[in-house]
Image (tube, rainbow, N blue to C red):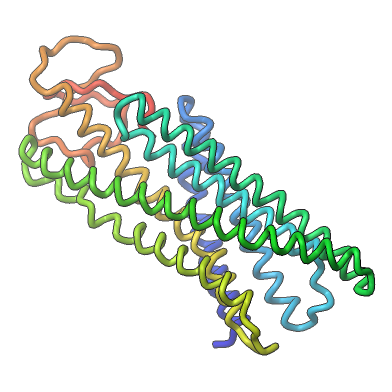
Length: 319
């Protein structure tokens, strides 16, 4: 398999995953009035990552046949879409973690981290736009020493900044997934004592794919930085292969997030609510329902349904 076929196959798979994500995100946006911002951010991630994937496919179709036809503007579209999609997905993942951290002080800390992520990606995006513009001016007139100087200056700023920002955010994602898996392990141990062995399906092993994809993304980002500074032959596939992996990983992470992490968040919050209310006097407290001793999160398909047993206060932020 040559590099062009590999790019087509990988990003074609990524587009399929994102379209599947759309079947979950769009309906939730239309019917969920409490988490509109969360689902809008999911739509932004979806659209931007689809645009980045389409740009990569166009790059493989055009660049490897006639490099001259691939313009700086085409690369800029892909760069902007990939970074905004990466940002939107990171904010969704951090917001997911915010739901389970507990005390308000830690929630405020997560809010500050989210704001820092937003500023970091914004600075990286500005640096990327400046680099693409200066490279365009330099390509228009390679003999212009001023344009070459500006291009090299912007390149020295953009490359390390992009590396630091992406690695930092991905390490935050990895830490959040690891912490989430730990909470699932604690929840499973507690819930099995209260509700029996049926809680196994909410175990932390379900987060192995998330953690593995986080690791692949970190390795790919480092690989891109290495290959971009190593003298390679014109036929080398190292750089396009590493860039392809970096662009594909967020698409796979988006699918894992919306089809694995979000349901696990819902289950964890339900169990936490049940544990908090277990043993209290049964009485109307806002919007409440009750669950039996044999209850498991998977037995609840609709949060507005009526179930009998242990009282549970429905958390309005459950996604």
